Image (cartoon, rainbow over all chains, first blue to last red; front, top):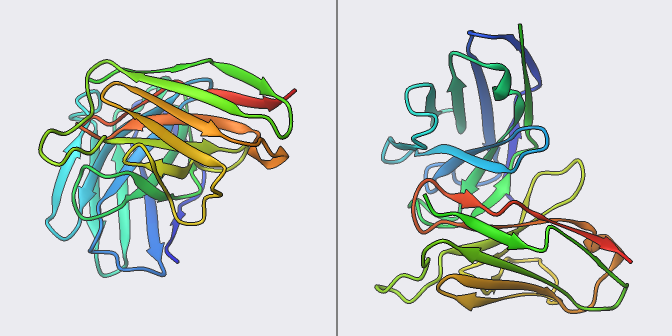
Length: 121
Length: 113
């Protein structure tokens, strides 16, 4: 049974960057796509982008284009999400989630446990 | 972007009774090429990440109790819990994966009456 284990909580200054990791264990890494979704306090779920490691292709939400970079390291079965030029409204819990297959248009399961990122001045 | 709108925002149902949540998309998420609705439902319990319940609008994820069912097509969808159990208290979200950016409904908070 695949599990996604994310890195721990981070506190960052406005204007800096954060890189969150998501390691997949117990399943085949390269056969799937992965997404990053965030939830700010009191807000809904927001898809940021994703990656298909086997094809090295990425998709990003236009809202985050230019600020977010999603990468994958097949040797460690780990996906990364880096968000730059952090603002206070980037304070959120960031989730990675595996997409049901190696194509984009499928549901997401399982999800990582979430990584809290707090941005303050 | 496709806008997903759920109703109600919150719902209180007695144990053993039926709970129904609806989700409407701003454009159809039904594919003409494969006749599939690109719509999923997730359950989110406090302190836990979202958990996939239903995909393709009506297919239950492995391990999900059969009291959960999904229906609908095109732009209108429903999640039904046939007999509410205490462990079903959660926030429920619909999500479209027809096009990127994937988008979610605002969530429906389900409580016990």
